[in-house]
Structures are given as C-alpha cells and as structure tokens.
Image (tube, rainbow, N blue to C red; front, side, top):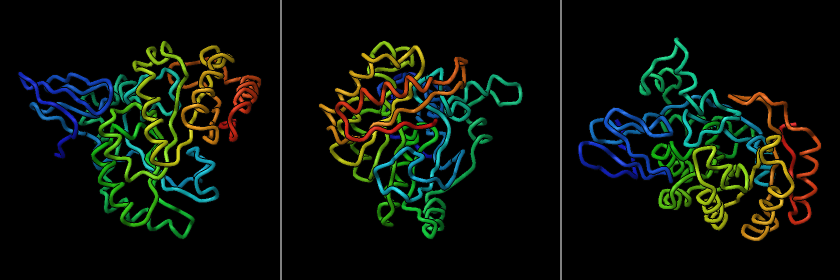
Length: 301
C-alpha cells in the first residue's frame, strides 16, 4: 500500500497528518477528517491512491474556467472524500462518504467503502485516457468533483507525468491545504479554480475550517498559475452585500482586478433544503463585483 506524504509518527502508533491545516491526530485504525487518509499500524496510508469515482470529458467552462483555453475540453477525474464539512455540498455523494455509510447497504469501514465506491485507474491508464480524447479537443486533466488535495500522492505523480506529456493540469479545489504540499505541487499545475465559500471567518468555522489558509492558497497559486475564483451563493448565509464586497475587494487588491470571479447558484443538496438562490441575489453579486473586477460570471443557473 502506498505510504502518505506529509505526516509525523507519534508515540503509541499515533500519527499527525500535515497535509492540510486540520493537522489531524489519527489513532491506529482511524481516518482523518477527510475520511481517506488512514492510520494503519502507525503508518499513514492514502486509501484513494490510484482510485477514481468519476471520469468524464467536460467543456473546460464547466470547471468553471472561462478564461483558460476557452472552447476546449478537459478530462475530469475525481475520487472520494473532502476535508471540509459543507452542509450544502453539491457533490456530497462522493465528497462526504460518512453520509452514505449511515445507510445499511454501505460498508462501515473506510477501506471497504473506498474500494466499493471507486475503481482503479493507474497513472499510466490516466495518461492513455487523456491521450485518447485529444482528438476531441482535450488539453489535459482536471482533478475535480471531490477535494483533490487530499488525493495528494496520486495527484503529484499524475501531474508530473501529464506535464512531461505536454498536457495541462487543472485543480478545482477548496484551497484548504498546507503551504508546503501546495508549493510542492504548483510547478506541475497550469490552472486552478479555488472555491472561496465566503469572506467570513465564522462561516468557515461552521464548515470545520478557517478562512486564512484558503486565502493564502489563492495568493500563492496566483503567483504561479492561472487562477479563477468561485463563490457559491447560499441564501441568507453569504449573499449580503457587505460579505460580497469584502470578497471582491480582497480579490481585486490581492490577486488583481483581472482575476475572474464566478458566482455559482446554490440548489438544495445534502442537509440543506432551502430554495435555490434567487436570481436577484446573483444579479446583486454581479453588480457589486463589476465595480472592481473585469471578469464576473454567473453560473449554474
């Protein structure tokens, strides 16, 4: 079994995972918050290494990346698990396996669940699949659907190989990653779409995370590759003008006014049942953003 990167062995076979800011303390047999990095006898193991839940050829605009090789396609791949706990997750079936494990038909232990919910896809097979679609406009691979950074070991190996092949590497991410692994991966990344949930520390705390690491990720990535930002607008949670203005001002001042911003419409999912985002909220967000940003896109409408 592939060993994980970025962890520390502790006494009594415990480990601390340093891949993301959670720095999970994981006891033998247990997994971290992401669900897919397990302590096996004092050794941290990435359960999803070489395992995929989803493979699909998408328009690059669907990532969404509207200003990076527009009009092309991208092979999109994902696995399972996530290191945030968004109650409104739009991809919860693969991002939050614990929700499914509560069902009687799902196995209770993470390794069995991962095996049942995914299939094997080696890096060589990923390269072959990406090559196969070049004739259909494919420019590379987007690591998406669930949180790609928790797939780090496979991600690093795959992006290196794809880069050598002359293909593009894209991450669609929540940006919740530690700085050292981020910097290790960035030389192989061509573009990122980073989901900033809200410019609000208390909002992130409700998701089990912190805002600052996400902002730091966006700032570091912006210096190395093409970056677009997404903000999922959720009624009564992050749609007020003050929060949107704070996000827009930070993007303009830190990343630059040419940085594209996507406002995405929420639909009921996972544990949220409130109605979809009103179009009036999306229109307001666009008007606020266009005061300072040159490229503002409304999506998922």
